[in-house]
Image (cartoon, rainbow over all chains, first blue to last red; front, top):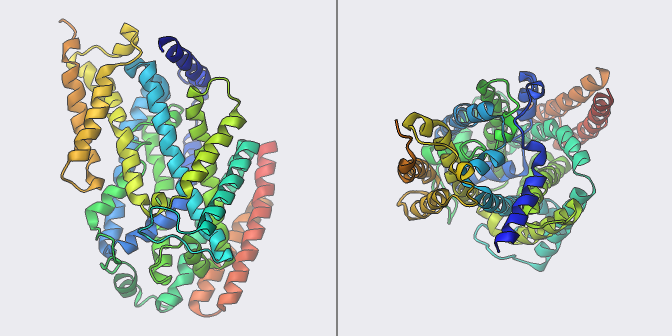
Amino acid sequence: MASKLAALVQEMDQINEYDREPVHPSGIQSASKFAGLFAGEHVAATEFVIGAFFVLHGVHAKDLLLGLLIGNVLAVLSWTFVCAPIAVRTRLTLYWYLRRIAGPGLTLVYNVANALLYCILAGAMISVSSTALGLGLGIPTPSLNDVLPNSAGWVAVTLLIGALFTLLAVLGFSALSRFAGVCSPWLFTVFVAGAIGTLPALGVHSNFDNFWEILQTKVWNGKPVEGQEQFGLWQIAFFAWFANLAMHIGLSDMALFRYAKSWSYGLFTSTGIFPGHYLAWICSGLMVAAANREMDPGRMAYGAAGIVGVMAVAIAGWTTANPTIYRAGLALQSVTPNWPRWKLTLYTGLITSVLACFPVFFVRLLDYVAIYGLVLMPVGAVVFTEHWIFPALGIAQYEAERKGLVWNWKVLVVWGGTLAACAAMPLHLFYRWLPGYFLAIALYIVLNLGERKKQ
Amino acid sequence: MILLVAAVGSLAGGLYAALAYFWGTMSQEAYRTALLAATISWFVFATLWAGRKTKG
């Protein structure tokens, strides 16, 4: 068992070998590169669903606009003041930094957990694309309460699209990445054009004199559709904040910010966040309102922009599922020694395609995004504490590295304990991560008080 | 540079078509066709531009 774990750890280290050393000063990237990198980052297939769900959850127009503003500002500040400073000081990926803190065994567990969460997210993106193809073939989109596939046709279309995405991911990740870069500005344009194209159907006058009234009465009118709970300002704000929790508070984006000249480059995330998680969500809200408030991304995009809308849904799913499948494969490579990359991508894609057949991940996307961030959040709290708070309290850092531990049981206790506490909290799911974060920090400090250096 | 201008112009044309439909100076059918034309034009010019950038 021990030798097998050692072999897995060695394999995982080899995969990440390239990133083992801190970024050399010659590798530091310019501010304009960062601004460009983030600009196309947050216009994905899921944007068609998330913005639409806010309408179905009966948000008021003012709460939406203010909530998104608050949440997105908090997200940008989290990148800037939590993630980027640690990345700039260490110049390491989360993988290698966590390895020093938690030990290689626990880092491996983190990688696998991350991979499984990525698979589900990619599955949701495949489901969104399936609604586009299903529209042309007359296959009904699953309803908001569906957990299992609703028809053989849905399964067939989803597996077909999943297989196609997987095949393309196997054939060439880098070429598709370049294609995704070309798609981003076009996708954003389709969101905006589609939203404008729905305005006549919503009854907005061409001089905009009734625009606000229409938004309040026909789009974000405060009336949830049957079976959906009503969202208010703080649910929207917290959702916008934690939509990328794993990346900022969870510190995954250390991989990017280790190339930044200054921690202030975290502010450049706003070039992607505001177009994607503000404007695109508003646009998809307008589209679903014009489509009789029915959650069917393919149909609502067709109504808003014709065949181009359907193309946008299909391509957005493709370009965003592809890197997600790739990342999941990369993370899983650590537990599949000697497998070539293509084989791993193939199996990851097939697992993802099967998951995509279950509409629960797509119709409960908001809850899934919350859970995804929540699961990885305690690890971010541990790294934050280790980096900033331990030196201030005189606690010795990097216990796993110092003692040669494979598993730092304190990190495991904090991770598991925090998730158990979050599960039991009498709070809305969207709010639980925040007290959970502070709980994780406090628990990790208490468990490490014995490591205080003698003065 | 010309390729970049043509690519960005394509997207601007698509947005203009949506606005023209909203203002009532273009039919829905014409708007959708114009958006499709803008899409094709974008992918042609942007891909050529990106290819030049990569080679350069």
